[in-house]
Length: 342
Length: 220
Image 1 (cartoon, helix red, strand yellow):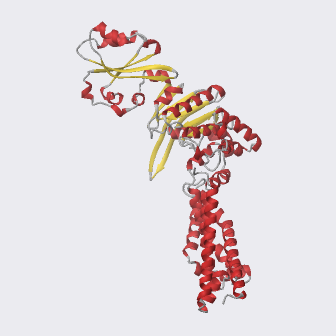
Image 2 (cartoon, one colour):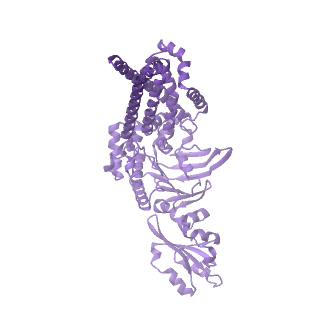
Image 3 (spheres, chains in turn orange, yellow):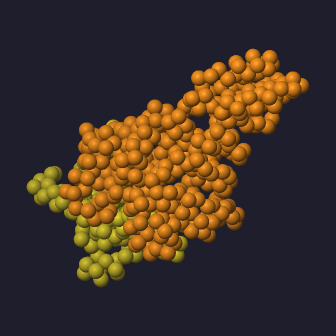
């Protein structure tokens, strides 16, 4: 099957005499059949990165290998053939507005020179897969955002690709629709074994379906690994910020009135024991709960809490020890990070 | 006043006017459409940017378009004579009309194609489409209605220009208006030709708009 290897990838753009480094020595290995998330804030370079995978953007330096084949060594014609093996979906769907649904799905096959009759059979099959068999004759302007993305997915699958690139594919959709699209992608990954690369700025997308994740900041990969592990104990500031996510409700630090802030993460089995209550009873010291949340990470419910502990009580270390003994993942949060967490 | 002779002259005029307008629009597109495509493709954000080709074509288009049609008509007389054998009459008028229309059409086509969502072009590229496939399967298809609207406007303009050629014996309704209305002071004939031109223009514009509406799938 189909793995992606990115080696020392650098991409520089020249604009008005300035040289902008969009990607800086990126190294990635995406195994065949994985769902791989690439997450970062806007402007981090993740869109350029995903466009380098099918050479819509030619890298300034470095290599992209698909199944061990270096894309830079292919002729234009072979590169186009290779692109047909890599499906792509976009934030803006990018459907042909003047063609109806079935013609849109047939389009990659038309380009590949498949007979119209065979193309239609294949397109119908795919529309069934994305639950749109009744919309065959409809034009994109009559479809909702979710339906458009389903058509785009069917279209991307038409040429039987081994890799599917998703560039902010759910960012223009409401949460429910986004959810259903992610489920569809997961289903496709399981049924067809397609390697899926997901570019997003939303941690929820990554935690929901990605096996692994790479965090991009300023054109560099700052952290990489299994999604669950990174969610439990993020190391880079960028990862911490992305995980804490919505900064819409932050409090001024001085109002938090706590000396030490820790983040604990627990998965569903440890949620049965009232750990916090027990800890308070045991040490007879109050804990300030600054934030609590539960999230679905790769199908497992994960709880996340920010706790404020008072210095001087002398038991902060005991608290941390106590939580760790009960299988919780504990990380200390620096004061500067608290704002973005809460 | 409007005896059989005048009526048959007017009928002849309508026929000549339609002949000049439609043939020059058609021939104008034969030249202008590829030219517009090349402008779009070689442009800065095109599929295959090439500033040398773009600048040359851009310059030629601007030069021709900056010469008023009436002057172009006169300047091109030797060329027209060499090509058609005479410099007057409706067939001869088609030559300067086409020369005048082609760069205009190229601009209209370029603008229509540039309007196509770059995202759709990118999607086609990601599917492995080559530039020719992108031109005739994406750009021309997605810009279809915009191109039709442009063709309607162009036809209307060429109708007006064909009438202008009447000043140098170009044939058609404009010719009749100049000869009878201007040189012979027969205001009634002039009024009739003007009304006929207005009616033809309306028919072209309304027909064009209807066709565009029927073919546009972007609106609900």
